[in-house]
Amino acid sequence: MSTVEIVHERPPGVRLLAARRSARHNLAVSAVVLVIAVLALFSIARNHRFQWGVVGSYLTTGAVLKGLLTTFWLTFLVVALGLVGGIVVALLRRSRVPAISWLAWLFTWFFRSVPMLVQIIFWFNFAALYPTLSFGIPGGPTFVSAPTNSVISPLVAVIIGFALHESAFMGEIIRAGLNSVPSGQWQAARSLGMTEGRLLRRVVLPQVIRVVLPTIGNEAISVMKETSLISVIAVTDLLYSVQLIYSVNFQTIPLLIVATIWYLAFTIVLGMLQWLLERRFGRSVRIAAPASRGAAA
Amino acid sequence: MSALLTFEDVGMTYGHTTVLEGVNAEIAAGEVVCVIGPSGSGKSTLLRCGAGLETPSTGVVSVAGEPVGWTRRRGRLVPARNRAVARQRAQLGVVFQHFELFPHMTVLENIIEGPRGVLDVPAEDARQRARELLGRVGLTAYESRYPAQLSGGQQQRAAIARSLAMRPAVMFFDEPTSALDPEMVGEVLQVMRDLAADGMTMLVVTHEMGFAGQIADRVIFMDGGRVIEQGDATAVLTRPQTARCAEFLSRILERPVA
Ligand SMILES: Nc1ncnc2c1ncn2[C@@H]1O[C@H](COP(=O)(O)OP(=O)(O)OP(=O)(O)O)[C@@H](O)[C@H]1O
Ligand SMILES: [Mg+2]
Image (cartoon, rainbow over all chains, first blue to last red; front, side):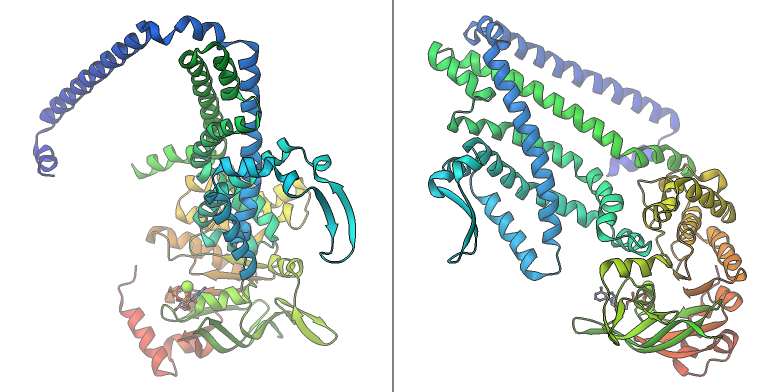
């Protein structure tokens, strides 16, 4: 605190000197960090126990790439379903009917609390728990009935489980986003005669998306990693594909490095996607920033 | 002159707090009525009820004889369906203290949003009308700006244009200048004066007593959720009949005029 005051009292020449000194200081720190990073990289690259040759030979094999593809679509599907489900859950949570908002709370509580691994096994065995699906009045007549396995395959059941789990998390993110839109915006939209659906689509959700995008980007990375749990039902995603390979050749570490490289690359793709979307939805604010700075000057 | 907007025994209660009680008022077509009163006296609540943004707990607001938020079925009033409420709101314009332009849309997009999406006006007609209105509020050069790129006064004028684009029967203003820097108050008040001169029916909540004196036909003074005094603007502002109104006016006029 006191140094700040002293700087203000210095003549301009001294402040310039101080700025130059701090620039030199930043450069020195950067150099040290860079040296440490290069040394670490060297140590990793030259450690023959990592078996870089094996990593290289498996990085683009068919089985690994197929696993990567599975992880890829599974992640996007779960994020997309979770986003839609999350919007629904968040809106139900705001309902003025107590039973509905309570039900939404119950849903969130349940699906956030049960470990995904437990859910995967539960949903995978859904057909064993409920051998037939029927539509009718409990204790009364049944209108339609079919064996569960013919309606949903175990994989589809597990994806539904993932989507429900993700909806609960996304619901909380969207709820925070909805609360961030000032009540005046809702009132302004209503005063133009918009119905609630139109108001959400045109006025509220575009503003919600802008504020929740960074959090959703984070969530997408979590989903990417969580999809690897699907190996317990023998779906060959990225992680399970390499596990199958190293269970045969015992090259555990190099193959886990193969998976890691692809997870890192996937995260970059997700990051770029997030950046593009943030640009798209933040346009009005970004364009405005320089102008308002100019006006203030 | 018959009343265009009527408040009949309007009351509003949130939980256990009564915010409005037994409000009766009539506003004729083309009339400008200013609502004044201390903070928390229920002015904004009254305005939201009038504009159909909230349904009063008791009593009825009607526009041109139609109860707002209700429909007549077999001689009885029942709550209107969402769509019907939306249709009623579409003909009641509201201008807010904090403008509430949609930040992700340009000025032009803000103005055509209602006509396009709610009234189904063809795009070209909506744009033409929007440009006409932008001319009226002096913002012709700003149609492709985003709200954050405008000054407060410009945003408020754009918000007025957005409301006018719906061709409202009544315009409601809730302290339209109290969030503005002093040098921008004048430009917004001028737009409102022009509107009044064009014969728009207006209900204006304001703390600008000088402006109320110039523009208002009548003034309503509220305190504690009730209408304490209402009548001819000059009469209420210069010769208040109640002690509470006199005290409020002297308190407000004592403050240095901006
Ligand atoms: N949704 C609500 N729930 C509970 N209380 C409310 C609500 N809206 C308003 N109130 C209360 O009603 C009273 C009147 O509020 P209102 O905003 O109508 O006053 P106002 O006259 O417009 O005041 P100001 O001049 O400060 O804008 C206040 O005490 C406020 O706290
Ligand atoms: Mg108010």
